[in-house]
Amino acid sequence: MTIPFFNYAARYAEDRQKIKDIVYEVGTSDNFILKERVAEFEQAIRSYTGAQHVIAVANGTTALTILLKAMGVGPGVDVLTPAFSFISTASTIVLLGANPIFVDVNPLTGMLDPEDLERKITPSSKVVIPTHLFSVMADMKSIREIADRYGLRVLEDSAVSLGAIQDGQQAGRLGDAGLYSFFPAKPLGGIGDGAVIVTDDDELARISRMLRNHGQDGITRFYHHFVGYNHRMDEVVAAYLTHKLSRFDDLLHRRRQIAAQYNAALHALSPDVYVVTENHDSRAYYTYVMQAERRDELQLYLKEQGIETQIYYPSVLPLQPAFAGIGHEAGDFPHGETFTQKSIALPLYAEMPDEHVQQVIAAVSDFYAKVKLHV
Ligand SMILES: Cc1ncc(COP(=O)(O)O)c(C=O)c1O
Image (cartoon, rainbow, N blue to C red; front, top):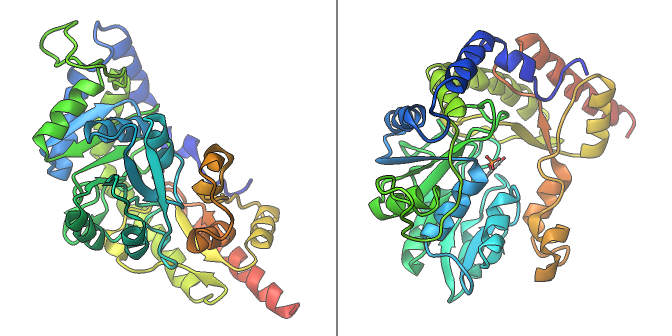
């Protein structure tokens, strides 16, 4: 591929020596897991987000599991979650023995639809998981208002949205608790799996901190307040993330510059292409996803031009084999299903040169020009 979708070699090039140093330093120390480098990283995220509590864990999926459990989710509990999302927002509910109640998404943004949320609330509903995908945020104000009215807790899945802002507040800080994933593809990508939980709720923080480490309180070793997990963060991962956080704003800024070029050029291709252009300056562009007519043909055409793309996501969650037991059918989530047929992600990473961005734009424009000639 001339223009890859991810370019990890470019992404980590600047840090080659630093990574060697960190691995050597941690590997020859006595401190491998959940020690001072993890504490330092938690403090760095506290400063960056303003969250009162930051709890470093093994990955974003585990952050969701811990928070759901800390919120009292288990057998007999319903959790409202988007039909169009990454698997973790539903799998974690099922693995805790609770029931996912799938909610359709807004037809323009692809994020949890507050109106459908209100329709789907059941007497056993305890938690709602608004999820921000790609670079677009769910409508947190409306969701919070509905959640308060029905006594639901709000677990904000901000796994991909560190640095995004809504109503003057950081993504992850608009619900009762949030999280950020540091999977290598994410804007703050680490050298392995990793994530943090953020919350201002003392009790959620206290329980989450113990759940990540076998129910221990960090003071008395081998005293287990309850049954917990081994979901801790490694020192190597934490040290690298603290290092990278210092240039995170620059990385976000570069991502926004690239997205601005895409937004301007692709918006002009409407109605063949639909892109969300609102709130550009407060968005954290993780992946650049647009809705495209003749999506599969476009993807093939781009591939022929050496441009790699991805489909986020090819199926709504309730129609995945993993959730077949719930009994949903095609047509149950019309907006989410339309997204699965039209959405396509274009390459976007901070290290991407403008020349490549312009090549992608030219190829997408050429495709629709050619399609029109043949109509
Ligand atoms: C919206 C969302 N939530 C949760 C996760 C899970 O994060 P992790 O891969 O760190 O487990 C992801 C991962 O891509 C995600 O996109």
